[in-house]
Length: 542
Image 1 (spheres, rainbow, N blue to C red):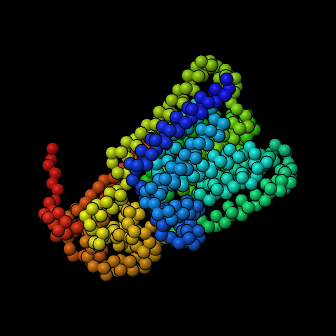
Image 2: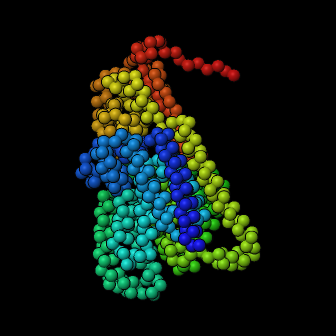
């Protein structure tokens, strides 16, 4: 009987994996990589091994493992999109396998997790290191119960976590500190806790190696004084303490059930209406109360709160909405280790609802309703993203590169619009070429360096661009910007003809941000290209 149920459960898992994987493959086919995906690929492709290890982490803000994996894959000679998408998909499959076949979650939970927005779209279709980070955390959760018996593989999973992201370093540190604090608290002795580690030679050596690597990685990613991201953080609108509060009372709700954030703003900079903040706080508080009871029952409150507190130290400094999935990763971790210690029994749930004077029948309806609301909202978010990817460009760079090649214009002079660096659409088109296809300020690298130049360096770059003469085309976000560009470069020709334009829709949950790209030229160039004069669009009043 048990074997039959197990086989049935495995079949359900295989069917679920097949359905979800097929959907993600379709999403990957239609998805156009955006700036973040291209930036990582270009660093891996064009930077030296030395700089990937020791230089660029200071400006990228996270350890180099993702770039290393990409660089190794690039050596196989596969095309850009196939490289990043195949790697991401393989790690996504590994995450699904762990959830479905190695986790202690119930059947219904293992069905709901793959339907979450961050797993079904954000971290599976968009190729970034977050799916790898999720894999490392799940591996750590799986090994946690045997951490004293198998300390080497346990610490290896923590090192893996640290090597992927600054959030991974914070989370891994929180896991180890929480374990030590819990041990000391329950043994009523710090000395016994320390002796327990010292007496386990493998664990002690593993912790020393982990600490050494973590310290090296922290030193390796400390932003330098001329890092552009440091300037970004300095203009935030919320205090650190308020952002710490938001990490606990806003991010959980935004991860699972509400959609109030735009992925073009830092949490530190976005100002939400009061009702949105309070609604998110209410949902988040309800979730923390549930987690508190789960942790208290198992005497795991340190394991519950300390890792997230360590994580929130960083999220309070810098976090974008696409990073909110870190809470989902954290949630899977704490639920996994909690269930490994003690399963949630039906009679215990019944007792809780009985104390609240809620019948078991009504309790089941409430739990079923909550599961349906969660899955419906997350499927809706994912559906919005897949629909947008199917019907419009997620980012304009792929079509931009395709247009340039289709018109045989690769030998023409393309001037990239800029703020400090060339605009993201130009950077993101670089992977489709074997060289930097444009010129502009600070164009010696195919990617954005995030190095903040001095005013003198900016002036030198403008002088260098002027010396190149008139461009054939100007790539910009808005055709009106060409006037400012020409004025700054002392270009007398009139760039008023739009040779190419494409709006793209970068979608996050159910919110879309339109990204426009224009290629502007003179009327003479337009006539050479299309065999006719450019006509300025006119609009009729309705």
